[in-house]
Picture (tube, rainbow, N blue to C red):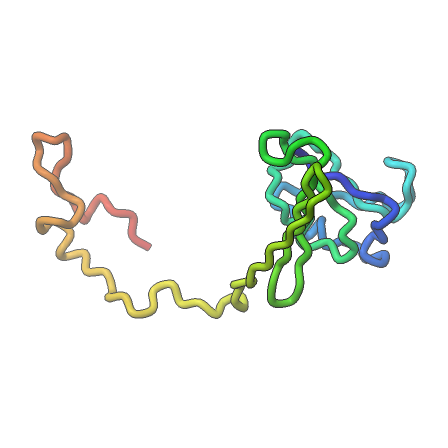
Length: 157
């Protein structure tokens, strides 16, 4: 189900041009109502197209005020229950509230690395296009509908 903003908690990321939820939303759905003309709440974020929400929880995790929540589907979170993440610097804690009032918390480490710090080809040999027609390199026998690869058909930069 889509996300929604609790206007009593949202501070519009202290009046910045772009809020944290606007920055992180992969579908660009979060919007800041600067003057209150769209929602009646000035300097508050809101989900401008809830039906388009991917339910990725990115905005919920990044919100510094914990002002964004999601309405989960009933088969995952029964009516009256809730799931809320709280992101720290090195971990994320999920708080699960059950319908009977029971509460559980799960803490998981955040495994992100600095941007550009990973070498995706590190330790791997350089590609050798002269071997592409050899057995085991993208070629199968003709009877299965495949044919030997042709290096000239590859897109090379």
